[in-house]
Image (tube, rainbow, N blue to C red; front, side):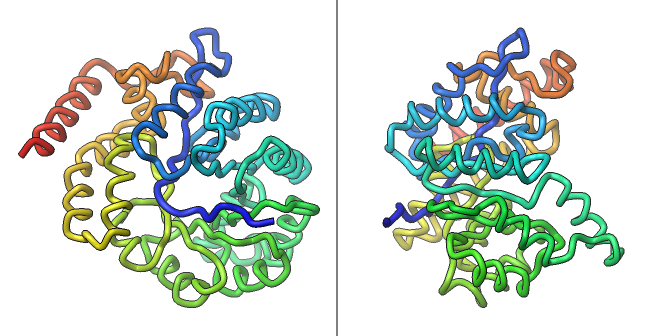
Length: 308
């Protein structure tokens, strides 16, 4: 069976909560519509910035179901299925396929981040060995038909990716965000004829210049994110970079305040989300009115730059 090729801006969708702390399904539906209306080429629920590690399996399934139902096939949906243990991850992966997701992106367990830190610190004895991670992926994706995106961690390298592509036929994508471009360029040069590489969108036009075919940043300014990709694909590279530069103050504001909550505050301001709560500290918000006013000032500056 042929699946839709993933390419473009696939934002990680934050999870909204009601005042009671329950997942706000209606807000997730509004977010889906908001992304489509603003030109997003796809969407990615249940990723790390969706606070998935703080959600129950059932909450994640309900959220994905709502996104898929609302999306109704208008854009590809790339579902995150990383979990606390491999069996849960396998169940989430199977559910994503049965629910109608176009592909899944997954790490070999949330604890892979611990191994990644140890690998990065040079403590190779404690780093997750390639074979263990390969077996984890084989377990998670057993019997899967839809494409798989490997969500890279720092313990992975070119040799690992080559082995994963050979052993797991459904691996068709890699999301690389463990370096600021070096490994991304290596994967594109060595594997680009076999799989499609996505970047994090931190150096958005640069990542496209290097050969990435997609990015997975936040839901802030989705119209601009989508336009950067469209312009680049149309060969309008200078205009694409100009759009990116216009958006940078908002990108910086989100990253240098409290990134998950900041993204939700943006969506709440636009009437997409009902609250800006984050887990696991419901109600203990870090951002205040001064942060909101700075966001509004940034948005006004972006609008003014558009009019020039």
